[in-house]
Length: 126
Image (cartoon, rainbow, N blue to C red):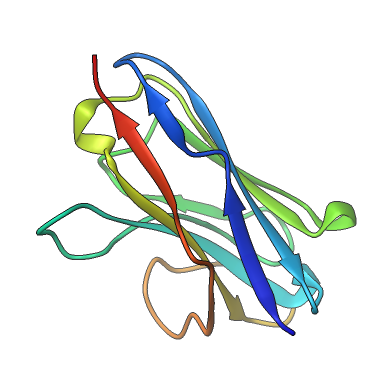
C-alpha cells in the first residue's frame, strides 16, 4: 500500500521550533518531488515548501522563507520540514504530498501531487 505518514506536530509557544517528518511506505521517494502544505480552519490549503527529487532544489512560500527548511533523506525514504521562529499564524494541519517528476531538478507548490498523507496538527500558542 502506497502511503505517506507525517509526524512531529504538536503544541509549541511562539518563537519555538518543530521538525515535521514525512515517511513513505510502499514506494520509494527517489523519483518524486515532495511538497508540504498546510490548511488552517476556514482557510484554503496553502503550499508551504517543496523539494525536488534530485539536486536539492527547493521552494518556499513567502510567509515561511527564512524560517522553514525542507530537506530529504532518500536512504530513509523521508522528507523533513524544520520549522523555526514559529508564529501563531503557522497554526494549521500540515500535509506532505508526492508528485512523480522523475529526475527533474525542480519542484512547484501546486500541481499534480498524487499521494497525500493524513496530516499532522501544528499549534502555536502561548
